[in-house]
Image (cartoon, rainbow, N blue to C red; front, side):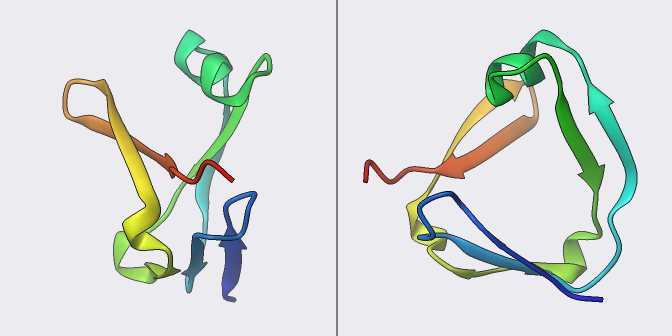
Length: 77
């Protein structure tokens, strides 16, 4: 199965040609802040099966914990 996705504005597009494993609902304060809700749904993927197909240069990032980076669409549109 192949999954296709994008950011909300559609500038960044990605595909996953594999499974999503260990889907969890995280209630930590970082996930609450990132999602704007009481929890965030997260899963693990094989990085070799994940690729950004458009908009990679528009990704922004920050280090949420030492050694852990979070990426997001940097578009202001």
